Image: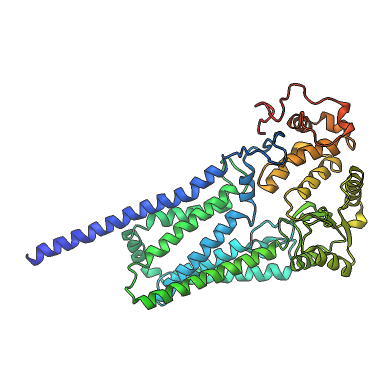
Length: 475
């Protein structure tokens, strides 16, 4: 074989290899987009149809335009932001590997800085639910944040951007070659598309779904494409002995775990109490059962004067955190209001009336209202407060409850509202469209004797535990 023939075959082999890499880049892009967008579309369309086993004959429709789970996924700090944290930590490990392999050459320093900035962004989700300014990059533009923090975060942001710009500028003569090599490795499409998807994080697209849902999905898809590019940019990977490969894999895993753990801790500091959120600014917040450390952090920010525990702790289901919370309230001079252990209607009604009275008493503010999980009792109390005190339509309360829970309201909430709202706001209750729907949901179901409900009959056309299409129409 002549040298000319060998050269032709070598050129053809290189050409085939480049074409193969481009094809792999296209297929990888499509696969990653499918993994990111497929579940996103499913969660924004899939309405659950489960029956509440506690009251199987009570219908529980969905009141929101989209599935409750989609609203929870769109919340700051929830599942989509946690996925972003995992992906950005992976990107930081990959960029760090490239940084060390190439001795800080090329654009690896800029890639590492961008990945670390992504980790910080994912770990400081905003807006915070308790009105706290947070520690994210956005705090530099928050007029309510302390001036020192704003100045410090602005300085960090400026230094970060300057370091990235300096790295790019120092490699300006090699940018063309870097771009050519990226094309040969099939990285143009995933790199460009990934950058666009990451930039779209700041835009709310005109797509069906809760606010913040698609921007977060877009961010995760873009970061996933970025991770693919970081892997391909380092090819070919060196052939190492098994011991060195295990050592490198262990170090990379340890780095990823450290970044992830640090990010989760920072996310916790943004929301020290599980499911913490504001019911009314400056007056009422709600959460799950607080831990001692979380309550200390939250108290330093909000200075609670009253804590209302909606769970009857004098039961076998008593929370192990209860004694510490009572002691914290005592040592900090916080009024502590406990749910009665007596399950009678009289005691329950008196307790509800007392909590609603405190919610309107300025001397009791700020108030922290909680149960154990902030999934049933506390959201239900919030809905009662919205309807009775704030005068909001009951539909708003039902939507807020299911979006907070990530699931439709329980059947027990339907029965509770049918029991406690009529005697306290009869005129509004009987004319409220959502209240009419709740009566239809529980038609024929005996909760407990409630004389007030006999004043007006439920919809006679409603079947037991079954709603018509019109009744369950999602608004």
